[in-house]
Image 1 (tube, chains in turn red, cyan):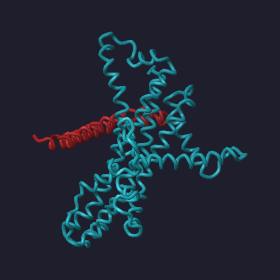
Image 2 (image 1 turned 90 degrees about the vertical axis):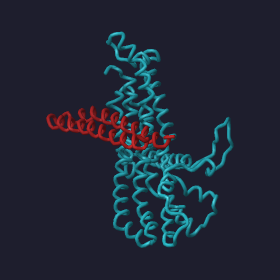
Image 3 (image 1 turned 180 degrees about the vertical axis):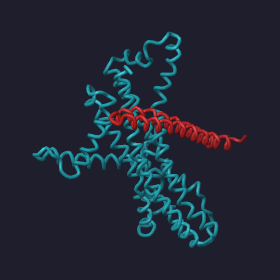
Length: 73
Length: 310
C-alpha cells in the first residue's frame, strides 16, 4: 500500500471523525439552548472549548498526513 | 512570474506548460533565503536577512500601531467621554474581547493583567490575516510588469513574489504560540507560585497510580497545546489561499491544454472567478474565526493556569 494512498485514506478518516464529533457537539449545544435559552451564553461557552480542541486534533492529523506526502522517501 | 500574467503567454505554444503545483506553492510560501528582500549579515549562525513574511510582520505592526495610536490619542484628547467616529469600532472590539473572551476565562482579578496581551494577539492576528487576503502585491506585480519593468533580482521583483500572509507561515504562528506557552507559565506562577502551579497540572483527589500516569500526559499536553495553536492558524490561512489559487489555476490549465486563450477566458468567466470570489468571501469568515479562536484558546489556557479548581 503506497504511502500516498495511506495519506489520502487517513485524511478522509480524519474528516469523518471530526465531522461526527463536531456534529454531535453542535447538536448538543442546539438542544441545550432550545431547552434553556437563558443559559445560552454559558452553553455556547462550554461548547466552544471542546469544539476548538477537536478541530485542533483534526488539523494536527491533517498536518501529519501532509508530512507523509512530503517526506515519503 | 505574477500569477495572472501567465495569461499573456497562453496563446502561443509556451515552452513551459503551466505547472499548477509549482505556481501554487510559489504563491503561498515565503521568499527563499537566497532572494531575501534585505540581505542582512549572519549572526551566530542565524541568517537575519529580511524575507517577505518578516517584511509583512513589520508592515502589519506599523499599520496597527499607527491606526490604534492615532485613534486612541484622538479619543483621549477630546473632552467628552463618548467616543466618536472610528474610535467606536475600536471600543466595540476591545469590549467584546474583554467581556466575552477574557473575563469569563480569566476571572476579574486578573483581567487587567492579561487583557493587553490577549488583545494584542487578536488585533495582530486579525490584521495579518486580512492584509494577506488583500492582493496588493499582485496588483503591484501587474504595475511592475507593464509600467515599471524592474529587473529580475531587484527589490520590487522580490517583493512581488511569495505569499503576503505572514500568519500562513508556521514559524510566525509558532512565535505567537511560544508567547502563549510562557504566558501560561507566568500566569500560574503569579497566581500561585511556581511550585503550586506545577503541582496544579495534575488534578487532585485521584489515586496515586493514576496521578503518576497522568504526569507525562500533562507535560505532553503542555507542549501539544501551543503546537496545536500554531498549526491551526497556519494551516487554516495557507489552506484558504491554496483553495483560491487552485480554482484560479483552472483557467490556465484549460488554456494550456486546449492551446487557446479564449478557452481560458471562458472557463475563468463562467466558473473560476465566481467560485474564487465566493471562496474569498468564505475566507473572510475564516480569518475572523481563526483570530478569535487563537485569542479564545490563549485566554482559556491562561485561565486554566490561574484558576485550576475546575
